Image (cartoon, rainbow, N blue to C red; front, side, top):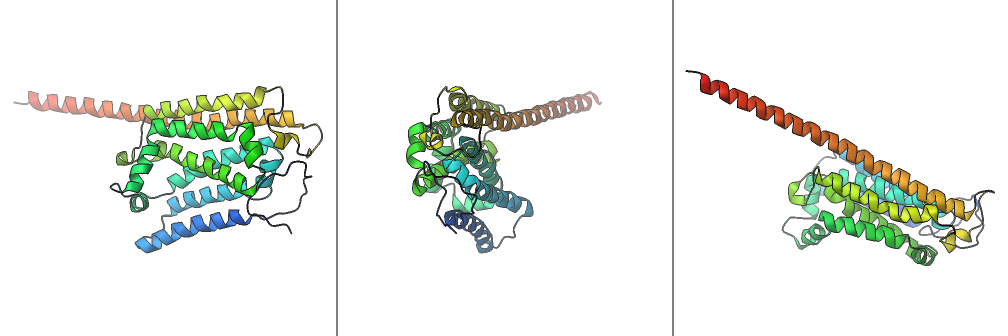
Amino acid sequence: MNVAWWCSGTPGQVWVWRYTPFLGVWVVVVALIGSYVRAHRRAGRPLDVRLTRRWVAGVVAIMVVSEWPIGALGAGYLATVGIVRYIGLTFVAAPLLIAGTPTWLLDRMLPLSSRRWAVVRALTRWPVALLLFNAVLFGTHLPGTIDTLKITQLGSFAVDVAHLGAALVWWFPAMRREPERGGIREPVRAFYLFASSMLMFVPATFLAFSPLPLYGLYELAPPLWLGFDPLRDQQLAGVLMNTVGGLVLWTIIAIGFMRWAKAEERADEDARRARHSSAGLIREP
């Protein structure tokens, strides 16, 4: 059995349906779950079932898109699977990890008066987070980046870390509820996610409408089945980025906006009732 540290691509190597464990993936999984449980034990706090499920689900998402076969296929054979890996890290794993982090643990790791929080705060201000996330999105999907980094285990690992790290920074202001942590609310959050969805269309459009294959790594990969050439693979990858990523963001925008509208309606109704009650009290002799 072949063993590797992380998934990477080798141009021209024929795909073989033989399990190849990636040890680095299992190290990351054990480290994330182990550190979460250890932090609770050191603080003397019980595991919150709801939050723990989210954290574990985020870690499982990292494992699924990084282990064999999805990790190997996405790193060196199919651009479509590569986009599936990106979506899994960005739109599944990252928000679940943030949603699974309790407030007390965040306060313990990043005290508001610490230099660590000052750095994180600077990165997670929503204009900065928006620019950082999209800079990583654009930079890591350039042909030179893919063809240079994904052919080595270290380079492929660096790309995945960049995707997950940028996604954590990007989701942080949109998902955290604490105002002191820079959490944003509607309608700013709707604009934030809308802007992200619009910017994401740019690289997706290049992939979907390019007349030629952009990535030598996927172009030189032996086909897994007939009739699915590198150009069709690349075009489908662009469609997936547009549709799946856009659908996730627009769904969140719609849900958040409807909740905000209902909350505003309830606040207006409460204000009217308060005014009517005050008026009634004033009229009484």
